[in-house]
Each structure stands twice: as structure tokens, then as C-alpha cells.
Image 1 (spheres, rainbow, N blue to C red):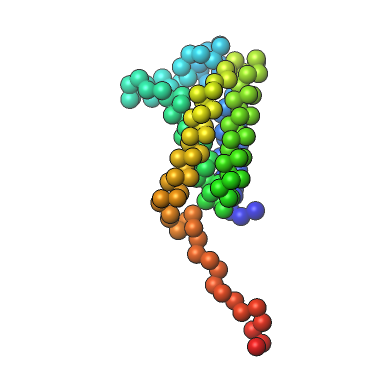
Image 2: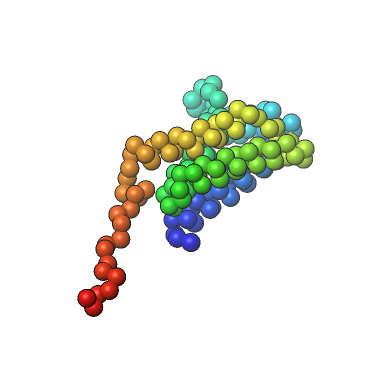
Length: 142
């Protein structure tokens, strides 16, 4: 495991915790249909926008960036992110979480991962494409 993998793992755990936290703990009341504390705060600052979808998009955008930065391949990152998105959405259907499964949230999650790939593809910072190791002669005695 590289030190770049640690932030990706931590962020993945953060996503799971956020997505599977009971709605009442997030300040949205029972049923999970009311706006969360974060949505109310953002709404007070920016006005009415689909904050829930933006939050889902952003969480998985960061997921895609961190796993690509850690060196994970495009396909494993996308598939892993899609499975995580599906699992967290299905997990939200557990009754005591007082949350709801939402197909639009799943689409926002996957769109966030895809957007991260676009950013990495067109903005190729050195962090995402490290220089190859210097060439070493396999037999230095020759």
C-alpha cells in the first residue's frame, strides 16, 4: 500500500459513513425526506439548488480523483465506485436508517466518478501521471 492509497481508503470509508448515517443524526428528521442540516445551510447561502445531488456528485468526484491519484486503473476505479454507489443506495433502504433509496442519487454518484476521469484526462497534472522510474540496466556488470 502506498501513502497515496491511504486518503483514497479514508475517503471511501467517509462515503460509507455519510451515506449510511441515520437521517435523524443528520438533522433531517424522521423519514429522511426533509432537508439535512448541510442542505439547509447551503440553501441559506446559495438559494434553492439540488444540494443532495450536488453532494452525491461531489463525494464520488473526490472518490474518483483520489483513487486515480493512488494509481488505481480507470476500469477498477469506475467499477469499484459504481459498486460502492449501488451498495450505499441499497443500504439506505434499511428501515432504521430512515433514509430512502434514490435512483437519481445513484446517477449523481456515477456522474461524479465520470467527471473525475474527464478532469484527470484533460488536466494531466504530474500527480496523476508520475514520471516513470529512471531506466536501470538489468546487468550493470556488462
